Amino acid sequence: MAKIDEVAKLAKVSKGTVSNVFSQKRPTSDEVKERVMTVSRQLNYVPNHIARSLATKKTMAIGLTIPHGSFFFSAFHTQFINGVILEASFYGYRVLLDMIPVQKVKTPFLSSYPIDGAVVMSPTTDDDRINLMHGEQIPFVTVGRVMNTNIHKAFSVDNDNHKIIDSICKYLIDKGHKDIMFLNANEFMTVSIDRKAGFIKAMEDHQLKVEEHMIHHKPALHTSEYMDYGYAETINVLGEQKKKVTAIIADDDRTAFSVLNALKDLNLRVPEDVSLFVICGDLSMMVQSNPSLTSMDLQPSELGAQSVRLLMHQLGVLQGDFLENMIIESKIIERNSCLTIG
Image (cartoon, rainbow, N blue to C red):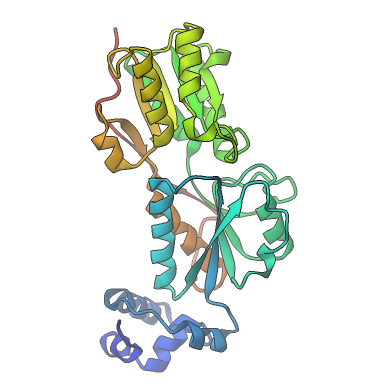
């Protein structure tokens, strides 16, 4: 690992200047700061956390709060966390991963954590984590839109979920699909609320009726049905109700694989009988599946990195103009699971 004198030599500044850039104890010009940060990244230099904490009176740690159930992280979570950790380490911060059990956030332990700020993943309506940090004046950034009734201004990083679902619907409709089933995220998540509204609007914009069987929501994390979400819904709608469905939009890869299992049990093929689109999936798994699954690249690593940058701005580490609500672009990755129909 590089030392501070190596950074100073390559950046052509003193060791004291390098220290000032990271500690923010004294102002440094933007040109010098950028030069030091660039060299630090090249050399993989990370300041000593203990020394910095004593100098700045900060913990030099940020929290990452993720609601969880009895399951392993998805590829999206892993890539997102990787983005958070790498970006935080660049600014000399450690990451305290906080796995908060669902419906157990009300205990006020979060405010006592040794952190300077936090990244909040998967916010829900009137999220207790957000209320707690807002009340304790802990700087935070959410990954997803804030929908707490008492909070009218908050920093967030997100995809454009209305645009995402509109793009997916247009993609499928252009291929001739009119009977589309949407397996959405949990109904209390802000991302689910935005995507549902976007789905309804997209269908209506194309003069297509949205019927009750077309929209479903993922069960709560702590329920036994969560892991198999997509299977029972597909069996019920296509098998028992005999509804016409030519395309299914799955919230994530786990849901998509449950759909594939259900379609196999119904003797239906993808994409010949039913097309399948995955919103949030592991890109490597999407390729290995048979057929390979068309999906939306949400850029989880970039979501993680930008959420840290926005938090660093709140903590005074990064200067300049930052959007309060930052949108990360997404794009369709076309593979073999969506067929054009007549």
